[in-house]
Length: 213
Image 1: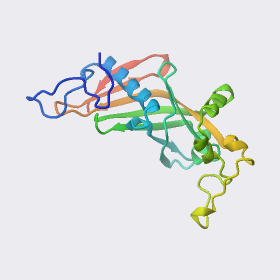
Image 2 (image 1 turned 180 degrees about the horizontal axis):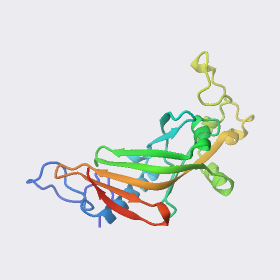
Image 3 (image 1 turned 30 degrees about the horizontal axis):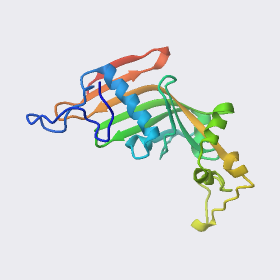
Image 4 (image 1 turned 90 degrees about the horizontal axis):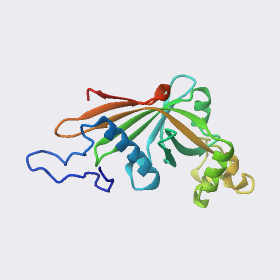
């Protein structure tokens, strides 16, 4: 059983082998899938972890892709859902309303592990929204107190205006986004030989399959 650490390798160096020691999940589909979930969960808890700030790609009404970096706020392996926060006036909210299909990209340069996720995005409401807002720090709430929407043209950068009272402390424009994971593509780069796999969670099951790197 492996243990996550700042240097995510659990074996001693092998002088006969080039590159860093291999993870113990190297040749196991089940362990590789479990390790992927461990890295995602760590990305929520550890702001220094590479998975804390993944890339999300959505598609606009003209079929053009749009990528941006977000902060990972929650990971629920049982529900196979991630969560991040955004402004209700942002382009990503308008885009996911038209097409909820999206992609997320995670890469840890030290571990040499890449995850490419196929997801469906949805704004969360009710108790989920209230819980996410309650857990938001005052500094983060300031981002939603801006009276102009994200991407609004400005004459000068200091023309951005904040109004806590007019935005209900920012609550009016805050929305958590749930990313329901349809599939995870795993890529582990290793000198001994790369490992690539697909973890498919569609149709209510889990299908694990090795792929050509």
